[in-house]
Image 1 (cartoon, rainbow, N blue to C red):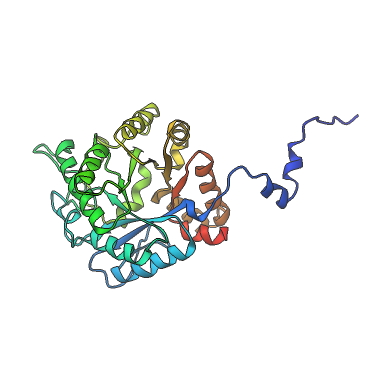
Image 2 (image 1 turned 90 degrees about the horizontal axis):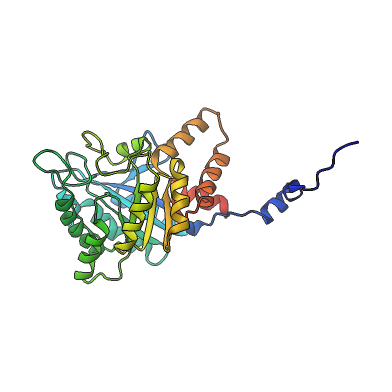
Length: 325
């Protein structure tokens, strides 16, 4: 006699229409944010070798890229500047004519109300030592001196037209410091995205090429230890108490447990950043014929959404939006 199971979950997997009908997690273009790099002095877009398909934009090519993003219906773009000149305090970050602030004005004018123009608020792209803050006499990142730079940077970005400031430097007290500066400068309505749980990850490697990082050493004294889960919850609580409007977990793939914890605990939106190394690995494996590229991309982002991310920063945002449509 053949055994007949009482429960048959396969009934809801039998056809594409049925699987689509009962899907628990869906992607929408509005939940996707495209990181974009803008290089000072570039006369044509510069390909990033470790991130096939991603470029450093010129200020001119940025206009079309923003228009394309708006037409795709994605939720926003996150801008990173690549300056020609760097110094110890990252002065280009607060210069109104610095590349990130120039790019922000261009993007804001091009985007209008079609998407949210966001900016990375961190000094690492602008410092000659590549750290996310200013250094003391011993070469240690000075937390409180860095907060003063972040305050000025926040106001400069808001003045340039940024609609959301992405605080990614992982300094203690950065959300409260920038919130206070914005409020004092008349930008009480400019929201803050706090990179609440940002880990010292090996998966940032290709990003270092993308921003032409000058990093000496590592960032383990301020970014979190990959071994720590509860610490991510503590950072989340601190940023929420300081007034973060949205919180972020970064990277995504190796920290889905932290992301799930954050999504369960946070009263505000929780986002995740699918970082450069995650992008590069899938692209490399697909280029070698080892995996199905489209299925791997879709599965990777669905996994991030399933873990609790309300929105995802991903370099595949435009391509995914097209597939969804």
